[in-house]
Length: 338
Image 1 (cartoon, rainbow, N blue to C red):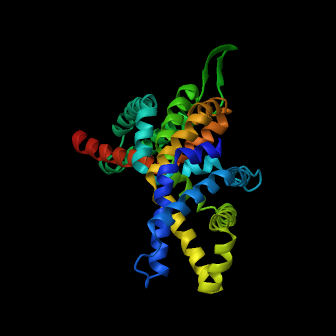
Image 2 (cartoon, rainbow, N blue to C red):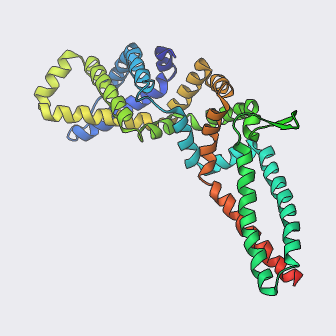
Image 3 (cartoon, rainbow, N blue to C red):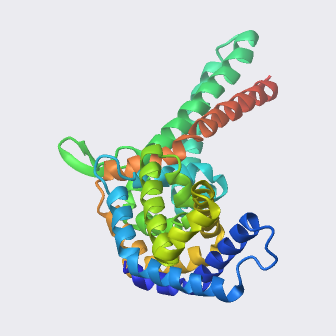
């Protein structure tokens, strides 16, 4: 990513953010002034600030990349994806419905087939039980069989990770592999598109980074040091020397901090900047294509570790639902057959 070109792309919206920050800070610190900062002076400072940001942006970009890519304490891409997925249930449902239609059909058919087989066994046992035994046996077995069949069907979606050969009398019959993993090449394409369309946004990445205290602290330190340097270079030596004398050293420090906070808040809320920057970074890095290739080349067990945790949090609901439905069917069977 060419950080100078990136700043050039967002120059217009960035001007509004900086002018807005200067305006709010001037109103807060110079309440007795009727004009606050004159528009011409604010525009001149804004242009100088953007020029300085563009000039020094490669240094800040290198620092950010170094922090995020640190092998020991860097960002966990898989962890971020899992966290964002699990916190957004609507998109998680859409993801599995669009990507896992064949797997959900398999779960339905597998549950129906195993339910039929177990039902035949239940029927045989039913004819050899007393009235009390029948009333207890069918709902109880229905509950446990519903749990087992749903659990087994879910496991067959993800397990085994690697193709497992099935042989009979020395003859190779077929390979058995988790259904999601068997379609890894196709799943990776859909997975990458959904990630880029919905999850790899400025706000979501920032929200995730804030959950990582060590990385977030380093990023804040790098940003504060860089913005302080840019601010002082923009204002010039005369302003940075005269302002503390006029306002007092403590008041000038407060003004600097308030300006930094206003800029951070403005950038966080600047949806236009996020959109433009996201499109530019996605285009030059070919993030969707690169991410797709990386997912397709993943070993199946690592791909399973990326997919399964997203689904695992609500897995128990589907398993328990199978047991409840099995018990209800068992009670209905007792009523009908009695």
